Image (cartoon, rainbow, N blue to C red; front, side, top):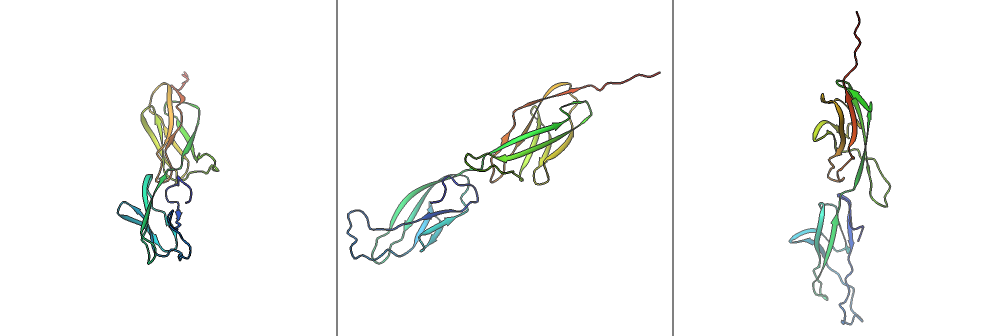
Length: 195
C-alpha cells in the first residue's frame, strides 16, 4: 500500500495478493484469477482483476475498509479488513506588518506567508485559502492567498497595545494554522499649532 496516512486527493494503491490459505496444499494449483474489490461498507471504491486497487477520492478521516476477493473456479471468495487515514497537510503561518506601530487613521500593511510543515517533507508555499487578520476577536481584513499575500487596512480607533494575529482557515487539502498574538501599538497623532 502507498503512504498511510495519505493527503486529500493523493492516489492510494493497495497491491493485493491472493494465495492458498494456511494448511491448504498448493502443489499443482493454478494461480488465482478473478476480481478484487475495495469496499467502504456496501460502496465499491475500486474494482479490478489487476490486483492493484487505486482510489483518489477518500475524504479526510479514518477509514475502515475491506478488500474482497470474489473467487474463481478454483478458489473461494475471501476478504481482509484494512484501515487507512487521510490527513490534511499541516501548515504554519507567518505575519509581518508595516509600520510596527501606527497612529490612529494610518494604514497598516500586512504580509502573510503560509507554508506546509509536515515532518520529513520539504516545506512548500500554500497559495490557496483565506487568511484573516484579527484584532483581538474581531476580523479587520481578509487576504485571499490565490490573489496574493498582502492586505492594507486602517485599524479601529483604539489606543494602546493591540493584539494582532493571523489565522489561516485551511482548505480541502491544507490544515488551518495561526500565529501567536503580536503587540501592535497605536497612538494619537502629534500636531503642531502655529500662529
